[in-house]
Structures are given as structure tokens and as C-alpha cells.
Length: 400
Ligand code: SF4
Image 1: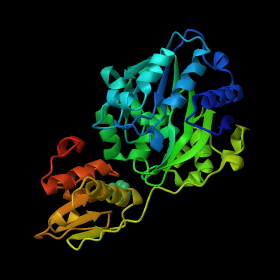
Image 2: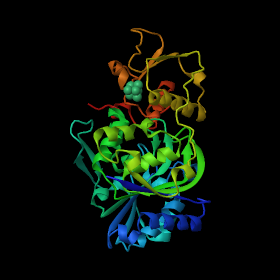
Image 3: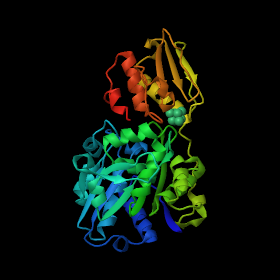
Image 4: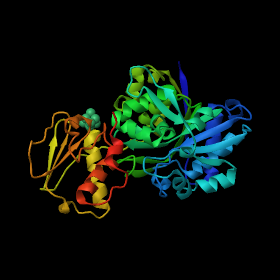
């Protein structure tokens, strides 16, 4: 069925009065809040707040200026309550993410309520038959909201190519589900979640976006853009075109298409406001080549996918950035990809990475996942170094 995606371009995404004007323009294109949102609704807005530090101005998170303007626009519909709800990334604390990124000020200014979704209950809902997940635990607060708004930021992502509307829904699930997503296959899991969890509205914060080493270590892009729509697949298709990325290269999009939900063809998307051509700004993609300049590390790459290679690159960089010299590592053999194998005996530390190396799951440093999250690879390297892990024991990431 045809759907619409609205695009609004401004000049200064840090200025509240300018963003208010842009938000007003966006809602005039997609339909005023009073028509979209029934009166007395309990509205839940889900941002992307996956860091405990103040990183919204780096393009990593949904920003407080955007959020204040969005809440104020929603309040024109006379809702009974506006809740800003998030369940942040594995190992992080949602309340710290709110506090560090100006959300307490947004709550004070607007009367919206901040909610750490981890404090509430989760409900198991069925996902499509024949898929990976079978079912998924989603926040009851999200499921019970009268009107659910997905409010992601626009970024490149080393595993999903981009992270905008579809991927942001992972933040409605439990810590254990997030681990399971990474263990079973992140992009497929995201696509299956989106098949059963449909926000009524998506409003994208493209004021300060992120390119390059996303979703965490990339470079901010002052895009000064807002997008709005009701179909996550359509919104992500348009976002990827704006970023100069072919939607066919975005795994959750082509999986959704195979599963048969969301908009099927780009030609069926009606663009409101600015055209894609007017606002297109090619983004540097997330995946940089993996180069290991250390004689003690031997890499056995058996046709691994980019996300496994890139996760390893990010993990090694994180250690270097935290002041750990890779020269202190013992001799190591790292294997990834389905066609890599490790020697039966070796004096080196063996580090098999990813579900493709599942035959080595009995080894003490095996890192599970498809792709395994970069933080899990970094934790395993820390353990090899003798540094305490940051994200909990390795066994918590094994699932049957
Ligand atoms: S585990 Fe295998 S299939 Fe999964 S991302 Fe890594 S190389 Fe690709």
C-alpha cells in the first residue's frame, strides 16, 4: 500500500526555536498532531539513547532539542500523558543516559515523564513463524501505549549499514533479548521484531546525524533534517537514499522485503516537503578495512562478513583508545568466517570469533554471535590481557 514520508530541512539543529519551527512544518505535512493522535491518549516516545555520556551533539543519540520540540508538538493533541521511554544498550544505564543528554531538562520544560523501560515488565509476543526468534519480550509500557512514536537518530552502522527506524526498536526489549539478537543474527532479529511491533508514527532526528564508524565512533554530520512517516521500511528506505546508500545494501530492509511487510517498492513512497535530491548528502559508510599491524597477531579470515571484521577492528581500536598497547598481547591466532580453521595445537592464544566458528565454542576465548558485538570482542581481548571485563561473563552470551 502506498505510504508517505515527509522531509523538512532547516538551518540550525541546535537552536530550539528553529527546531520548533521545523517540527511544526513536519506535522503540517504528515497531518497535525490533533488529527494523528486521539485526545487523552497515553503517548510513548522511544528515542535512541545508547550511551551514558553526553554524546547527542556527536550525532550518536536522539537529541534533547529535537525531543523537546517533538513533545511540544505531541502535546497539541491534548494527550493524557507523554512518556519518553528507553531501554538502553547492554551494560549501560538508561537513567544515566537521560541525565547526561539533557532529557531531565526536557522533562522539566514539558511535563513529559522519563521512563527507564527496564524498570517495568516485559511481555512475550510471537514473531513470524519459521523465523529465528519465535517470540520476543517487549516492554509492556510500549505495548500498552495508546500511541507509540519511534524517534530514532540517523546513523551509519557497521552491521546494519544504517540505523534509523527499524533498528531503534531493539531498545524496547530486555537485556537478554538484545544478547539473543546478537547471538542469533542481528539483522534478521531486527526485521522479525519490526514485523510484529509497529509504531503509529516515526519521527527521525536528522539534525545532527553520524557517518563513518557508526553506530558509536563515527563523525557528526550537521544535516539539519527531520523526517516523518508511518511505515518503518519506507522511512529507512528514504533515509538510506538521503545518505547516498542503496536500500538493497541495508540488511533489515531487504529481509523485511523478503518477509513481505512494509512498503515493497520505493516508487510507492510519496515524498512530502523537500525532495530526496534536494537534501541528499552522501555519508561515509561504516565499514573500514581491517588491518592488523602487529606481528604477534595472526588473522585467519575465512571469508568473514564485514560486520565480523569490522567488529574486530572496532574492538582493537577501543583497547588502543583506552590506553592498552597491543604490544602487550600474547601471540594470538584470531579466526573468523566460515572457511577459517585453527591449528589443533598452538603456543598462541586462540581467539575464534562468531557463530561461523562455532566448532570452537569449547575454547576458552570463543566469542559467540552473528555478528558478535564489538564490545564482546573487546571484553574477550581484555580478559586475554588480564583486564577486568566490562559487560559481564562470556557465558551470558551463549544461548541454545
Ligand atoms: S558469524 Fe559468520 S555469518 Fe555471522 S557475521 Fe560473522 S562471518 Fe558473517
